[in-house]
Amino acid sequence: MEAAPEDAAWPAAARCVAHIDLDCFYAAVEELLDPSLAGKPVAVVMGLDPEGHGAVATASYAARAFGVYSAMPLHAARRLCPQLVVLPVRHGIYRRYSAQVMALLHELSPLMQQVSIDEAFVELTGRAEALSLLRTASARIGREIGLSCSFGVATSKLVAKIATDQGKPRGFVVVRPDEEAAYLAPLPVEVLWGVGPRTSARLRELDIRTLGALAAVDPVSLAPVFGSRRALELAASARGRNGSPLVLDRQYKSISSEQTLGRGGGDPHLLWHLLQRMAEDVAGRLRAEGMVARTVGIKLRYTDWRLVTRDLTLPQPVDEASRLAAVAAELMRRNWQRGTPLRLLGLRASGLAPAPAVEQLALLPLEA
Ligand code: TTP
Ligand code: CA
Image 1 (cartoon, rainbow, N blue to C red):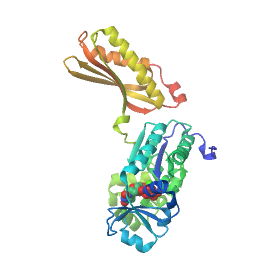
Image 2: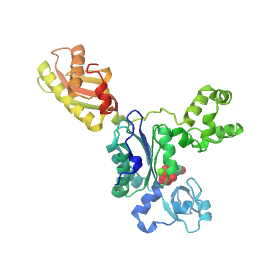
Image 3: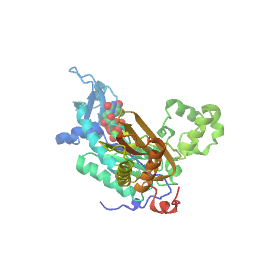
Image 4: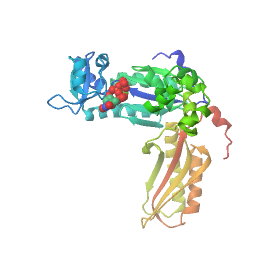
């Protein structure tokens, strides 16, 4: 794929968050499985019964052109579009396609948050080539899986998701650092998370309809209406400032290596040797994922099944085997009853974060 001009390097100092959402997901899968549906008005319907009752789960763009939308009762949808092709939902099939997309996104970064069956955030902070990686992922979702998707990229989850929605379908909308306020200014306040009908009605009473207008008011004047905390949050969000972190799936929160031990599980030389091997394994996987770890832990299971886990959080994150092994060895010295045989030894890196860009790493002191 050709590099677009907007694929310029993402600045190392700025956060980089991508949001991905599949277009017309259920209907798109049905079209993929039955190409004769392409271009026809299709509704995928929940709770479809023989009498034709049910509610629209999603509608293809051709059906949306008739005003058919999610959550609409089927009889209302048919009134708007008599030639509507109606299909029952097939969750198992959609889940399989969703899993393929999520696995492909997870290749970009283990810092991924799946939000729903067809929606995810990926954090690419510190990756200068983030935009070209994302463009390639978007092309692969089309080519290898057969689905169309929309991407939004920004310095926060909030703005990335808004960008995705603005670009639908097949969008790839990039809001560069420091452009958030200008990008958001013309948009209606309802695009913000948590601004539902009540908040938007109150804002309208204050003659605030756009994010530009919201950003322009002094949050102090909003405090009597919304409370000071919410007022500050609204004012910051209107400028695109939102620090919400990704909520990672449990499986991505740590990287560990374990070894069960036979005889010799009480030999300090053997255990030290194993810790080094496990540290190399964990360090290799951290680097492959482009991650550093803030916390290093050990897991000791004695032959009577007693379990001891201890960890240490470091002032500077690490990804080198020697540092991981040194911290694990120190934890062993403090917590292992020397000479007492172990059944299992484990080393775990957690508190994961994206590795800083190379220039930043060079500035870190060698000794933490
Ligand atoms: P959405 O992402 O909200 O919608 P969509 O993918 O169909 O369309 P868009 O291009 O606008 O993103 O929801 C994802 C899937 O979740 C959707 O295909 C069907 C299902 N769904 C329901 O079952 N019920 C609902 O009310 C909604 C909104 C979605
Ligand atoms: Ca979608």
